[in-house]
Length: 472
Image 1 (cartoon, helix red, strand yellow):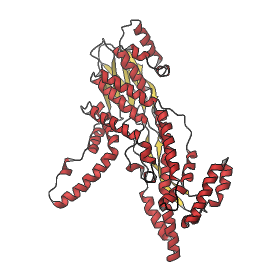
Image 2 (image 1 turned 120 degrees about the vertical axis):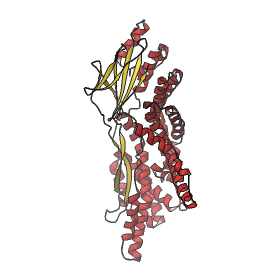
Image 3 (image 1 turned 30 degrees about the horizontal axis):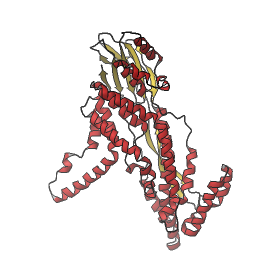
Image 4 (image 1 turned 90 degrees about the horizontal axis):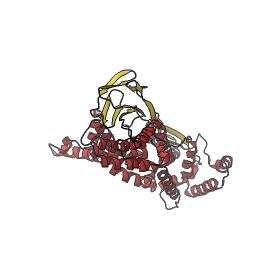
């Protein structure tokens, strides 16, 4: 956790040494280094603010709140400009994903407000905690509608890219003619059960309001939201409304490493007669037939029959190579937690939540990746043809395509400070030292000084070490 916090701070600031120089050549070299760092800083600031803020909370760093607030401000702009940045025009589509500002997922954005609430609770800033919890709830409640709107905007922008004429640049023409092919690959994505709600957020809201005795705020939560709260906790609420004075300790454990991205390289034949790219007139006729086929085909078989004249033979067709991210499952670091012989139960696993948003964005990510690969593939093909006609060999296109292949990579950026699973347990708030056992071994000890109030013990297991904050 210390290393994660230090790394985030380092990535967010230009080293002091970069501002110093001893001679003109050093100044020139360092100014380039600073410029590169500033470019990367603007691109990845949001990611490192979130990483640093979460790590800072566990380490009880005074600037954790500042980092998370900066992330909250940046992510508002990121979410607002998402479709425009990625699909606004051909230039945006052909820009590498990893060179654009980090496009935060909504589940990550909700967790920024969640950790802001935890930090406020740890400092007895209860009014702020309530505001941040409400923001987190609103953000994840809006996720489904947000993606529906953003995907609609993205599709509208992508359709505009097909509107080219003979005066358009060759790059734009190549992209337009490949649009339907790129979008047809969406059907190859897996079907998933969509999940947008992280129940830990309403659960923390419930515990916070019960701890503060604000039962009216709990009553204002929707029935669907309250259904996510464990039955025993709802029974405690009802008992308190009748005057029960028992106080409890809730232990919340974040365990494991959440799902992350890796890179997958894919090669596909471009389903188009490569000769079309050598003759603009033929190319536009081909594009018109492709559009007509896509618009009029009633089924997959009919579509295949319509476009078959434009399927290139594998021996002399155009192969495109692109990279896209793939999601790697998260993993837990422990299998059991207990305090005073009370075992925690796994309350929530982040996998479905992450997977939902990953695959919601994947059609756009894949479309962009395929479209980016078409111009260099066509240029390589044209170079190969020129080499055959002028020099009698076709190695030029291979060299061009090889150079492009060495440069392709998927955007694998992701917030990695989040856990894979949440465990919860509850015991009565009694005096004395208590031990948290992890897989049967004592890992932490704690005591609560005040038995007249509820307490939340918040634990993070990062595998090599456990961190704890007591919210009393």
